[in-house]
Image 1 (cartoon, rainbow, N blue to C red):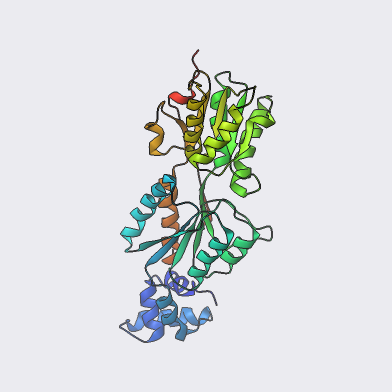
Image 2 (spheres, one colour; image 1 turned 180 degrees about the vertical axis):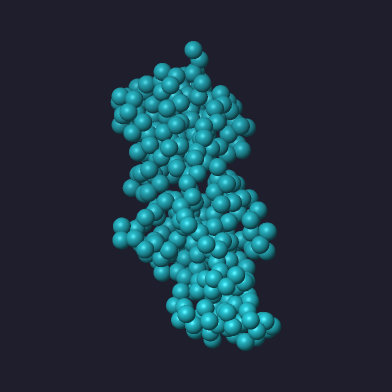
Length: 338
């Protein structure tokens, strides 16, 4: 039995889910005509009345889980701001679960949802894959992912709200190419994971389209942290041949790159231009100010929470996907002197 049925009945009859619950459980007031209509629709939908109150009760923790891989990245603070704008309007609380970039911890977060710790979940992962997706699909409660994932066999039960990070890296790289920069480096995440692979492809495809060589020693994998970006850039800048610019797959790594450039006595942007992605507040507070691709993360949070509220209230949704567009915010770090 689909736990959304009570909401489907409410939609058909044009009443609230709580009215449907009162009519089916026989507890609380419900007008005779309304009750008759509800019972008729319930019978038509083969609904078991004695389970209505139980389902409604199970759905009323008034909490939402937000599962994130990294609690040190301000990117997620911006998302929380957007999520809370919606949750506060609906009287919901946010439970933050830190998954430590670990599949085991992600599965534990999903298990919490299965055990009805919360009514729904917004989940960030760098690597949605068959294992975590199959468990998400087994959960009755609504789930919103912040990356796109479509199972080969179809039948997915989740929604997704995301910004196209492939396009984000593409426009950051194109910005450098448009200034005549040819030797461009890239520091990303683990390319065997979904997010790392998408962003690396954005860089490689853009370079190939411009008929520019992707130099192996100018491409590095890191871990989306400032220190990770610093170490990757330090190794890259320790070679004889240096890139004219570096695109980093997020702002924290880009700031680490800036630190490595400073230590190597390389001037930004005169000797080396830098582009990040996320457009964190700190991007405008470092020196020089960091050019970054905004992933509109506050909007991701707001739209994700709204999708969850719509699902929980049984409101019809025609789309399972909300795709947001990244935008380039140009500052001093990437403008090559003419």
